[in-house]
Image 1 (cartoon, helix red, strand yellow):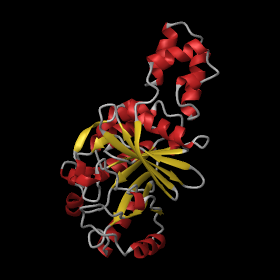
Image 2 (image 1 turned 120 degrees about the vertical axis):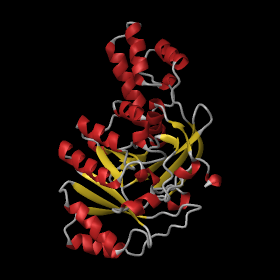
Image 3 (image 1 turned 90 degrees about the vertical axis):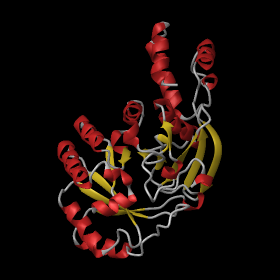
Length: 328
């Protein structure tokens, strides 16, 4: 259910405008499990809404948690399933949302790609992941959102943009990650929004990146870097590069020097170093060069951070999400 459907219904039936504001506030709060519980609405309206509009399009099938992390397997209306993750950073709570059932990109460090691609999520399904978590954790609430779960967000571009219009969280607290869909990076740059954009990079060499991420055969690394400069210069917004350190793949001194050169090429470029998380069926191993990278990047005054890993024990960390782990 989209709130716009309710808004149109209220307008068509001559309800006062403040009723929609009440419903919107109630719906996004996470306080209520259905319309009937919204006691500030007239009983007849609650009953009509409950009969006419499904409250949420996803159903919890499985729930797991470990310290600081929660993961849910959610069943969709057609029986397919997705995973979504909640991370508690002490100062705020972040929801990691999926945008597709499976993924077509088959990145070698990611379990989701081994599922293959099933379908895009609808706008409603994107938003209902947030509503699911807000209901689950009430009276706490989500403070930040990352579209970094299952799927490639820019291959579900229209539904992604529509969902952003309905999220009641500031744009600067919402991040979108892409493996490098160049036309959509350009299109997104031209919107000049305040959302954060992250590029799943993982190598600054075409051949290595092709081995890790087949998408780079379609969208060449050199062209991707040009698009990244265009994005930063057009939006004047920081652009984040995600770099998972992989043993004997992208962790040599040559790799480090190339990363430094890239980051120095634009003052708005920022590096997020990720410790590689284990993925069933993959031979890739975490690098032991993290300290070297940290030391050299600091010495060269590169803007970077080392991302904390959440949820490895429950396969909820970056790259580990999969709807059916038996096929990974």
